[in-house]
Length: 195
Image 1 (cartoon, rainbow, N blue to C red):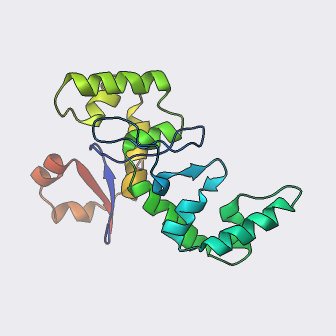
Image 2: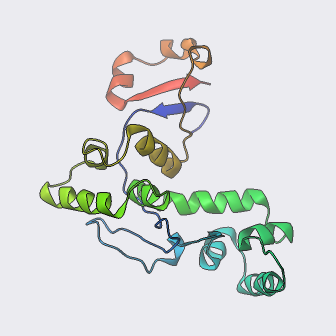
């Protein structure tokens, strides 16, 4: 967002993330697995080599060199961390790459990767998704008690690159409310915090 932080109170999303085991899991719109998408892969110790190439601009030669260095280390750091240490990429580039990867994932995949949506809960989600035409993910996940409201909103914020905030009274800039109609806030279910 431009100049303001916004705390979203609700929303629906359709992006995807890998499972808690580190294996890539991508969901198609029907909820099926597309596990072949290297762009969404995350290794157990950070972004996969394919994701580093795709999103961080690292070359295959740089990956191979870093892997050779890691193989000689007693306690090797994650590949992405080693690339930062070797000054192949900056931490900012790595963070941007992770944000781009997350933006391509669904909220459901983010919840799965974080271990907040178990296999059993995911099956219940798929069943509910198939039972009704186009139900919002939030209704299924939170309404069906598969995840908490907070877990859902944090995952949605991660996908949209909007920080999850629990505002304190002193943090809210009340002058912003004079610039926005109350009806707009209710219809869009957002609350401006500060400029």
